[in-house]
Image (cartoon, rainbow, N blue to C red; front, side, top):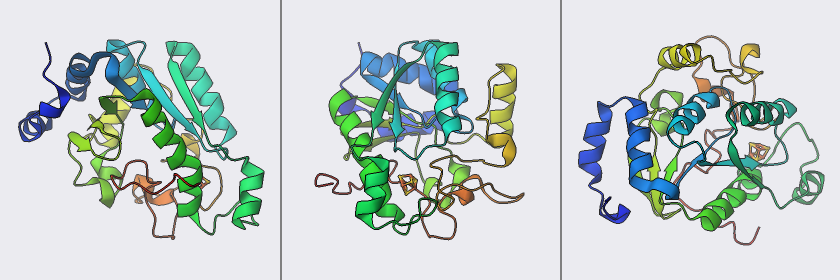
Length: 246
Ligand code: SF4
């Protein structure tokens, strides 16, 4: 029988996971949290990898997919393709805002550019995420972040407690590089997001201010909110934006 999640010895587990294969960490998570394990997916560039790894062990795992209202059409298509191929249990949480009305009320006159991306992410991405975590009330949340994606991710641990979501957050792919990702994708014949081959290494929403293709040598997240001093939408941060009134 697994111990209560709140009693987990994180330093020991993290030391062990540093030397573990990601699939073993997912396996441990499935055993530890059973039906209280969920995962999130942006259905982005390399999302098929963690989905494949997780559903091999837990075919019916709930997959949280946040629909901000501003995703690329290709992302919706990609999600449907993966859902059909792997019979995925996708739980789509949508923004409460009408996408056009939000732009109007927020004073965002240009639909292809956000003047205030923090406010837009809080209203259209963080609120649905917080709602998903409240409603699903997981004990463990699997996510696909990697340390080499951004400075903000270099200090992350394989398993952390999130006071914001009141659950453990497990990031099995932390130490993988693009090479290991590619090898796994190839071995299991997994597709990249259709925009990946057009230079989009990290894919979020479609305004050019939020996602652009990268050039050789740039880190994978440099195409997100480029030049705006923002590298995270906020759902992976521990601080809770007060989205209650949004
Ligand atoms: S990524 Fe851009 S469009 Fe999407 S929620 Fe954030 S600011 Fe809004």
